[in-house]
Amino acid sequence: MRSLCNSAWNRLALCFVLAVSVGAASWAGSPPALSSNNPRHTPFTAIAERVKGAVVNIHSERTVQGSSLDPFHTATTNRINGMGTGIVLDPRGYIITNHHVVEDVNVIRVKLADGSSYNARVAARDPEHDLALLKIDTRSPLGTMTLGTASDLMVAEPVMAIGNAYGYEHTHTLGIVSHVKRDVALNKDMSYRNLIQVDTPINPGNSGGPLLNMYGEVIGINVAIRAGAQNIGFAIPVDAMIQAASDMFAGIRRRAGIHHGLTVRDQVIAGNHAAIRSLHVERVESGSIADKAGILAGDQIVQVAGVTAVCSVDLERGFLEKHAGDKVQVVVRRGGMERTFELAIPASNVRVSATTQLPAGDIVWQRLGVRLGAVDNQLVSLANSQLRGGMLIERVDPDGLAAKAGIQRGDILVGLHQFETLSVDNVSWVLNHPDYASFAPLKFFIIRNGQVRRGVLQ
Image (cartoon, rainbow, N blue to C red; front, side, top):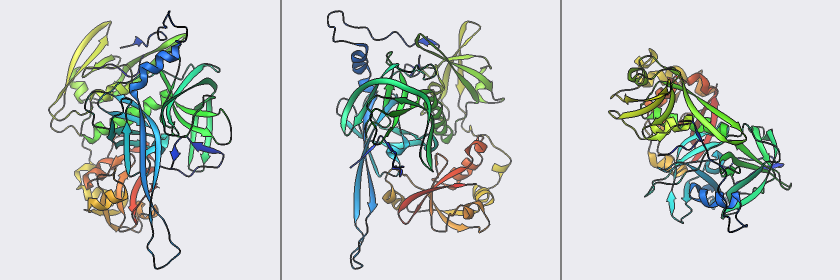
């Protein structure tokens, strides 16, 4: 399996709208070869053909309760359709898009370039960076595209955007980079930093789609356009997306109880050529499966479970869908030589702290001030079909963290940070997460009166 990296529904300020419609270090390669027989062929025509299988169209549906002025009539239910775009990050059906494309939706359908369509579920969320991972179960491996870098972008550099513009699937538009490191505030709750500004036509439905350079590398994720203005669009730099996607994949791995013990660093060399990426080990946790296998700080990771690894996303992709008892082969470069190590995932691979010695329910009460109980998952799916379940808030300590955040008895807790809360153990696991301090303020997601709501615990 080759490397990727080489080489909802927010209320927006009137001045901006999100582009979603409502109703081994190696060369990435030279620009695509041109046909000497047809002057109409350009680098971008070759790129469009090459990457079409890695761009997907996203259609969503959410249900909202309408109101009636007539007290003798019940409220109506309205369905609102949305659309966006996604990029395939892993051939097994993992797709990245903007979080606002799939926020608070009930149904997600993904359509591929060949016309086939699949139901999708949200595998992980990062609302802070407006990114989400989707998963579809495909009949055959999907195509992917190369992830470049935005660190060396030049103003006036030509770029191409691909997206589901106004529902017109696989729309391609060309333009240039207008500015880099642009900060954009949409409203008091949502803002972006260090965006790429382009004059490439970006329309509603483009959200989550790729922004590509002349090498055919993804350099950004299209996210927003300025309402009322022409040729002003924005994209999240791919480097920020790589970090966020790596964290989301790592969250999936940790929820499976797998801890590899590696802290890695992405390295990219940019210049007058396609990006050169490589992945290096910064630290190996003592006693971890990586430590026991013999991996050392300073090693360059070149392959994980058959996935060519040149960025942190590739490391986490290598551990996807692994289970207790599996062995993961990791190839590293050390002292100019390649060496292969075997990381054995034990039956229990979750670190234990002193706090985890307490029963899970006591940990939750101690830390959050709530007692949790079972809930009918049908109530959860009625609020959002993408949610698999939750925990009923049975008791709230009036002096606890949850009460201060507005959580009430009868609410259904469906998520903390970017993790599902299907059991008391899930909640306890989040509270004892090794990176818990970095979650602050801790986001929570609840269902109240049939609607998904969110807030922060601080």
